[in-house]
Image (tube, rainbow, N blue to C red; front, top):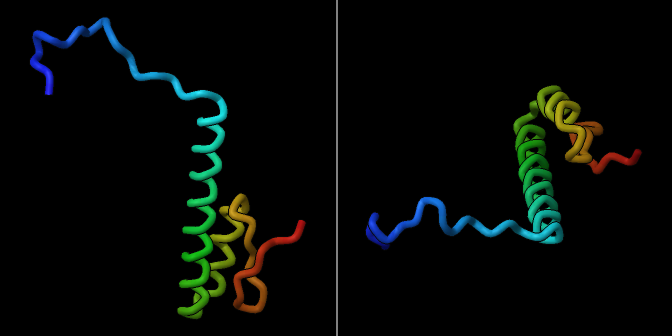
Length: 77
């Protein structure tokens, strides 16, 4: 850890990630959200909360899932 006197407030900045790195991070975040969403939908269906799962799937259509007869299915557009 640096002493305060050694820190230059106008000096080093955080490096900006490249466009490729940003795109990879964005894809990873979206995939993680999609996986977590799928898990939530499956848990709701397992509890018999089909209407709630369907509403959640509709509100988060970017996940790409729908509820068909109480089963989580990948949406085919």
